[in-house]
Image (cartoon, rainbow, N blue to C red; front, top):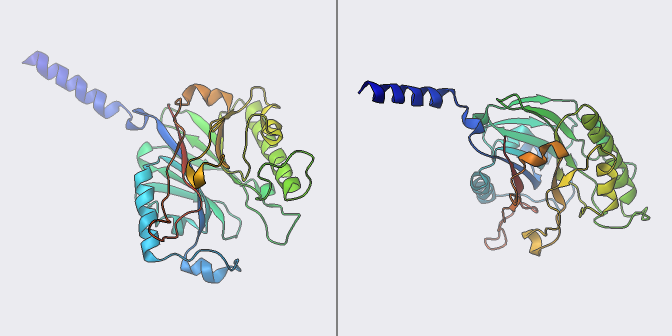
Length: 291
């Protein structure tokens, strides 16, 4: 009886002192929400005429997909505020952070509270928002440190880059390629700084570029580092939108390669046509990392 009580006591101690956040892999997601705006934002900003206006049924379905996604760390694009993001990722379950520039398409970082991850948000990478082609600014980068309960520290850069240069060659100077190339140079400098500080990092979001290891823009940010980046979507086509190659990407530095769960890149299909709903023009893309 005493032996049983002793064993039970040690099992109890192991339970209360073992951090549940480290019990399994962490699911990291990028998801472009396609102009997810509150009614206030619809009236506040000057917006394109063709942006989507969502019904209560649309919002309910987005909530369903967010719950089904069951994600731990999410980088959202095209959301006007954390207030709006809370309708999909409730603040009772997630800590929410946003970029500062006063534009309707912000990036939102949502981190599940139960993971006990400390988030230190840095100043936005504002230079990504410079738009030489037009009056309206582009989107800055969301820069933050994620500090896990075991003191593992990861730097994260969330991006939403210039559209229009999906796969054009290096010599192309039109179709937004010049702006996108400059944005990749800014990301390269960010990555080089993290690399020089021996800091593990993740770059994720909507790159508006069909990246591959041979693409000159991927090489721009990868080959100038001490060790190259891992393109988690390498040689894969997305089942979203009929099997096109990815423009939503998650890149990890070489130090996190050992944490990457092989074949964990997944795409959650958003079915809006079947029910005539207005949901998201992109599907959530996720990977898993072990810590």
